[in-house]
Image (tube, rainbow, N blue to C red; front, top):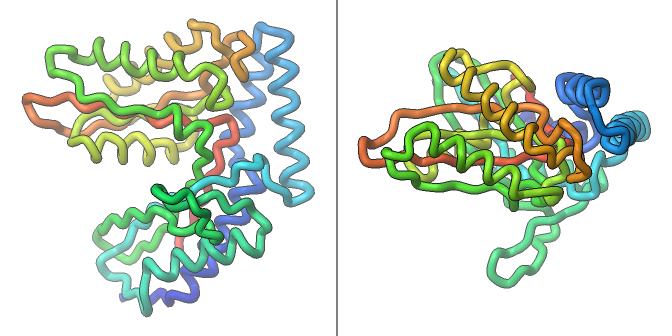
Amino acid sequence: MKTVTASRITEAVRDLAVTAAHDLEPDILDALVAARDRETSPLAQSVLELLLHNADIASRDEIPLCQDTGICTIFVTLGQEVHVVGDLAAAIQEGVRQGYEEGFLRKSVCDAVTRNNTGTNLPAVIHVELEPGERCRLRFLPKGCGSENMSGLKMLPPSAGIPGAVDYIVETVVNAGPNPCPPLVVGVGIGGTFEKAALLAKKVLLRPLGRPSERQDVARLEEQLLTRINREGRGVLGLGGCNTVLAVHVDTFPTHIASLPVAVNIQCHSHRHKEVDL
């Protein structure tokens, strides 16, 4: 039995909030460099160079990569042999509060009806998954809403099949234009139920960038989507070129015989996320 205290969870979440705002993961930086090097549009190539320069300044000076420091989603993987001493949810929320206060990060969360700012960037959205063993993993995803607002979900009829799903995914990304600040990372969830598809689409954003699905048919689908979207030529910040998306990640789940849910979660080039195993 492993014991993890609520105070340790709070400390970890606080640190994740601050570092995620400042430091892009190496796979994102590598993808931006690769995009710059293959870019066919001089203007788009120049913008990619500026994005890399921005990332360097943010990390070096410990300032946010983007002024929109996001609404936080935390994925918790909790082993059944882990004993959390204290309130897990409260500990996570307190970690977000401390991170946004001490890290001088913009607090963007407001009441959905009154639009009054909560003043703390709380509440964060928390998902907990149980598994055998003693692992306690926290995965932190602060999501800016320029990209989140361009996401979508559609309940397709099964007769639409995968070709219909592909058309919907491509249409959603292409019609987003420059609003989500491309080049993008696109998460796709196919199957399950209404809410399961959306959860799949968001969680799959955390897969290392460009790592294909373990299912060969799904990996081929990811490559097809990447090619089709980039062929449309919307490009970096909507200025044209061959890099509308850096990667498309797809996850699936069995669904009802009468249903085909398809969710598209769009992430901007400032793909901030961090994780830690306690």
